[in-house]
Image 1 (cartoon, rainbow, N blue to C red):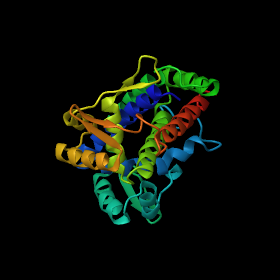
Image 2: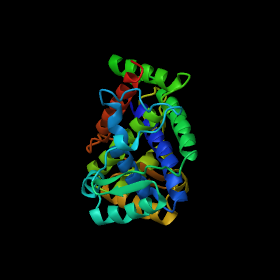
Image 3: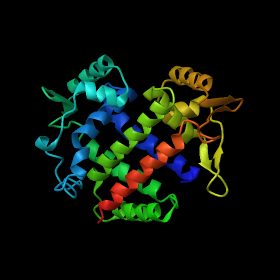
Image 4: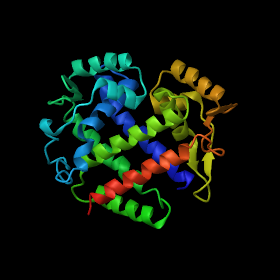
Length: 288
């Protein structure tokens, strides 16, 4: 998979993540709360698209949401472990999401709430997410024959007259969690640093003349802040930490990521390729 696709995937992750974060911010949360909500959402509903009787159900906006009895709770310990965050931090932030009515706490753990106060804004977000997915899938060839067949099939699913927007939303949630978690695990271990690396890549990256070698143009801090939604002071402090750790470089023109510039010893290219391959394969199967 070429680096132009890695950059396109990064832009999709950032754009789709911001759709959720914007709603969480309106409820008094922040970017990290958005990560936690993604973790709860994925644990609650991702399984329905792989169950023998689940594919094709609760798929389009005209279908109902996944019934409460079909959702799965996740324990706070398991959620914290999956995100690589301290349990106390996760629980403190979960309490805010529970109070806002988007997460429900039960004796078995937490899951998405029975009633979702985000609708109809949530439906709008699903529509926008499908448009973002369509744009990503239209970027060009994803590589070898099998992956390219899946890309075309996935694009067909996303562009059909009544696309399975709910399903696309669930699958994209799992993909975004995979990417952010893998970037964190393979670099500093911090989700915010991972998010910032992705934002930095989206700010700097563009396809090269041959579509393979990326054109990485250092980005000023203000551009990175605009893409990530982080406070400028927070972005500057964390960017300096990434430079010190070797995951970003600073130039007179701004900052640039290092994972697309060299041998990628951390394996971030591979992690992104695994996530993209899995995503388009799962989307392709929705049309079978």
